Image (cartoon, rainbow, N blue to C red):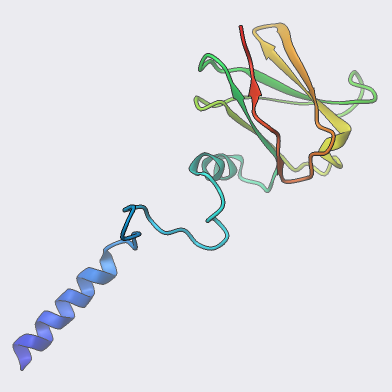
Length: 136
């Protein structure tokens, strides 16, 4: 009887140490709050370290691209923020208490030249900008 009990305890300990996986896909299960997010989105949110205000992706030639956030009304004197894409083309801006994203535009640079300007009308705080495709 003692042998069976020891074996049962060992099996239970092993099962507790093995990560929970989906039987069909072999992927780790995520909590309810993370189930709808892509791995790239989770990675960027963790890297930013704050609640993300805006997230987007630029598809191009797998180069790092500079993205600048400027206000629609007065780009010279208003709040501006600059970031660059990661190797997957994702970028994120964190919440700095600057209002809604729809009051801003994205200016995309390649080197020092402006490649594209994108309005953020209709984008909510914590939202995602539709993918931007660059052809150059």
